[in-house]
Image (cartoon, rainbow, N blue to C red; front, side, top):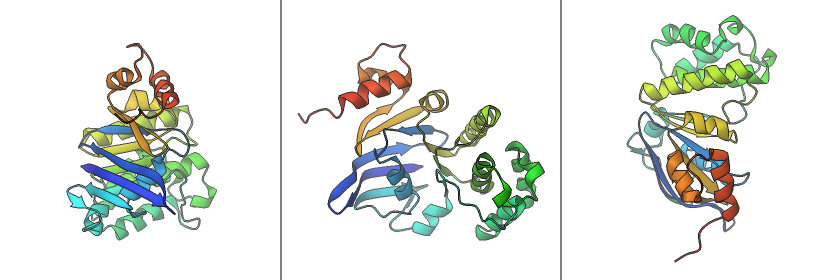
Length: 245
């Protein structure tokens, strides 16, 4: 559903991400983790079509982003780490605007249950400018989920949420994957990634250090089989890339 092949993004000759390849299948949740500056957000923005790769190919739902940008973007929803809602629109108006922009015919039937699921129903008529940081995050995710996209990119989706909101958001994400969406999550919350994701991709200085299930990540870290993702993450990132053979 999401395919990244040889993705490289350079700025003034300096590679932010170098020769990165991976795929996310339908129904899969892939966790994207790494230290600050590892290239996580650059990768997400490139898949979303916001940044143009220096080299490489990105395909979403069978549509190559370079050749079929509109079709690729219609199949995908991207929620950045900092939501930017329209201050003078209400929660309900954001969903109606999204429905008009993407020509969603049954948006009203979808909106009510979605707002209830994300605990926004009582805020339906509230202006976005009056919402807390966590509520703005939920609003951005509601607009993404309203479209029922085939691929979903989430950059730090739990920022600003309280413990109940975190639990409910995990279930909402699992529900979309269960319905067949391919989901790519970037987060510094390694415990969340460990509980939620089927596989994990570790980036460091723009390079892929490890990709696989938690057991495969442990093996790559040469660490004991009961190690947490956090333990494996530090073992791998502190060791750095393997030298070329």
